[in-house]
Image (cartoon, rainbow, N blue to C red; front, top):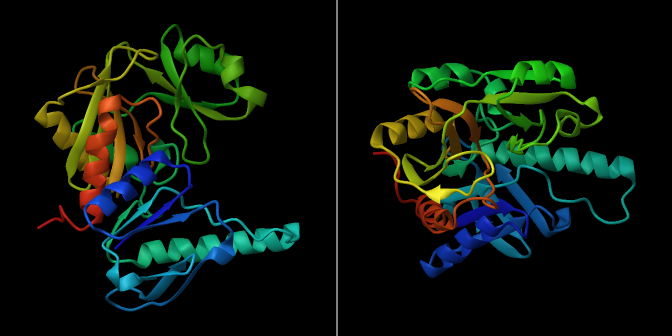
Length: 295
């Protein structure tokens, strides 16, 4: 039994669910956009894991039967229509707290647990993240947090950059010719990452293995499938593990020993190479179904 926590239009979650069904594995999608009354859970903490059940649209899911959870969203389900703003805020907070507690308590594979150091954005500010990057033989990027476009311009110079939000889980966006005052809208603080003039690579890690990799020459150019060299694969897999992530996309600048620009715990695939989706879906389905456990 596999539980998928995602928005109903999440293409990757839907593809993983379909793959699991093809393999005869029951997979229940609890969409984050549905009313809270459609999803309920009752459980008791136990030494070997929580005891209880989850109900989604009348379907019972015994927590002890779960082999894996794909938590694409840690956000709560939406409050019921007609609730006051105060009641909706209370329900949202309580549901989210209960869901996060359950994800932490489950003994099965969870991608990803909310307590993972890099579960929030940007990964650079997670506890121990920079030490983890250096421990696997990579270098962290040069970064600056500022709301000031002049400061950002002096920091970047004539080079390439990524601009990322300090909240949520969105990945930093490549800046391809946009002026900094547009990227730093409303002068809100943002994380500006200096990108070296080198090819970029993205490695998709699931559990203890590489699921897929892609490469491109520069920001804005298409991503292409890539056979990553084994030492780089080992570094990416080790880094994801050190950051507590069962599913991650590691973005590298292929300069020198390698510069880790980002580690995404919940990557979207809109701009990925077309050939990435199938092996990634298959790898996630296998791991969620219980295959590929550490010996």
